[in-house]
Length: 303
Ligand code: CP
Image (cartoon, rainbow, N blue to C red; front, side, top):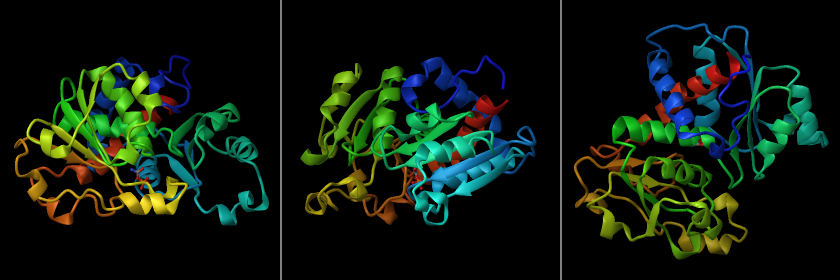
């Protein structure tokens, strides 16, 4: 690994400057044809990635695996902790110390906030945070920014973040990055799922709480999130807000023609499937963009 890396691990989006982010987005564009299988590359031949997933995932794990394999690298997976030595009580620190002796990069998803940082302190190879509890999901943020850049505009965009702003790690990461791009942010959520005060205090950008119907005619991006049932300490509280907002074609009647709707996925019912066929939907394109973005991150860390 060369010593002039922009980052040694990728734990939090705060570690990246605007210049670093724009560099990754530019590199992702260069990887798109390889991500689509139209061109072949072997630049990561001989490199091995370990996916350590202590929580479920479809997109993050599989797009990392796709990115690595399409660049000629290989992947090993620990996705079922019941059949690994974690089931015998092995600690995260020991697991990471051992696995980092086998591979060139570790991708970690864990239910505890701070787990990725802790892992990086115990690893001899780069660690990428693939989501740590309600903390951060920086690679999702980079693919979200890439989607906005490609499908709308980043600088000066008006963006509504809607849904579970309290527990959604994708929102917690994204909102910090958006402050670098002079965006106007509308926060749309049920009262008990508002963005925690600690995030509002940290943010220097242009934010306000809003009702979706009051801003739908001015926003460029509607970023919808799932209510994170698994993070509620009390299921009764979850039931109070479950299904409290659902985007349908009627919700979008006054939207700008150029509005794009994003969602990190998986969705439950917060975007009705009838929206998928409208000109606004971009969430499936967004999930594809995870591949070139993760190619850009891996090539930065491994070459
Ligand atoms: N967006 C996202 O993180 O999806 P997965 O949980 O399927 O990885």
